[in-house]
Amino acid sequence: MRRLLVLAFIWGWSFLFIKVSVEGMTPTTVAFARVALGAVALGVAARATGLRLPADRTYWRHVGVSAVFANIIPFTLLAWGEQHISSALTAVLNASTPLFTAVFAVLWFRDRMDRRGVVGLLVGIGGVAVAAGVGGDDLAGSSLWGSLASVAAGASYGLQLNYAKKHLMDVPPAVAALGQLVAGTVLLAPVAVATTASDGIDLEPHRLLAIVLLGAVGTGVAYLLYYRSVAELGPTTTSLVTYLIPVVAVVVGVVALGEEFHVRVVFGGVMIVLGIALVQRRLRLPRRRAAVPASTGG
Image 1 (spheres, rainbow, N blue to C red):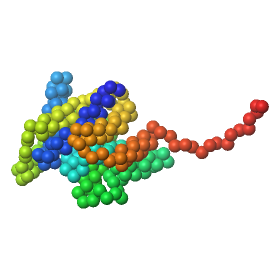
Image 2: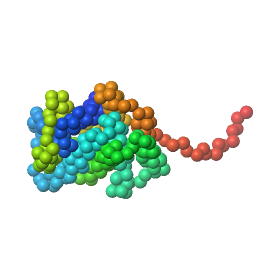
Image 3: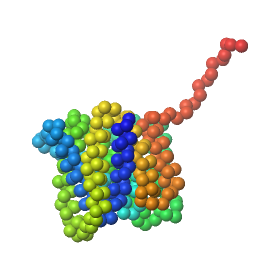
């Protein structure tokens, strides 16, 4: 369980690192640096353990698709979104990932969603709306698109998780993760170079430190911790980290970045967590009381 707390701490801080990094780099450059540094970190670990990547085309095709939906799209969207909304709100909205995972499982694998799951999905969607400020004065223009980008990143993660379930179940997690980051690095490189050449780059020391920590620790080390947790604790227990990341991110955003605190973000986050708990069947809805048999006692 200690490993999950460390993982939540790392990923919670990652939203701050994104916020700082994207001040001097384009969103695609932030995504590229994050993936590339993560690949280096995992590559060093793989070399130490003698891990080798397969050479067959099927493997690379599947990790390539996974890289698009697990790294390229969401990492870019999160960085772009944080140019317009706070890191705390980004983390809370991105916590909707398990909700999208459940939706895609229903659409893709025809998984059944019971009444509890449907209620959880509706509560979670409501939480996203509350956190984003739907109906409030502060949701307009760029903040709307920033919020949508964060939610879309969660949807992309959810789609990739179902793709991996279908095509990468037989691949060891560490092999899938490293291949995914390598593929993402190759695919993102030309885009990052083009956007950097067009918009420039401003790497002040604190931004350089932020992107190094985001890539090497927030992606590379975090992936190692995540997959080891899945192997040792199982995916269900490991998914508990989803509940902790927004808590860390909100505190870090307010304390370290001085972001404005909004009660609606916390309230919406609680609704999202409640929705996830219902979808993942951690909570039970009250059932109708059955008829109580007549007592035979005095």
